[in-house]
Amino acid sequence: MTVTFIWYPKCSTCQKAAKWLNEHGIEHNDRHIVEENPTAAELAEWVGRSGKPSKSFFNTSGNLYKELQLKDKLPDMPEEERFALLATNGMLVKRPIVLAGDTVLVGFKPAEWEEALLK
Image (cartoon, rainbow, N blue to C red):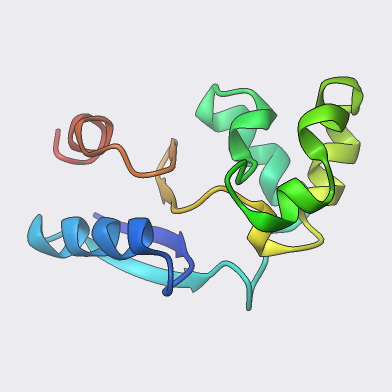
């Protein structure tokens, strides 16, 4: 199985995730989240496939998230506006993201990845 691995190479969590994929022999096509930022349509699709709320796709620990004061703004923001905002800058998007068939993984949680990718 080949997966799409959306990451930011300088991110230490993304580096750990890439190492995990390599150690488990999972072929992956890499996509740099800043150079090829996800579109609003892609994000809407991934949120639907992931079963997670759109808020979980925001990089809440990032500087841009804090600068834009999104903690206070997100609760009242419509979904379409959230996707449009995420599509403006890859640094707003939580990473890494793995797309594997119907599976969408956000963030690196080894146990979750094992269950989803090593069945």
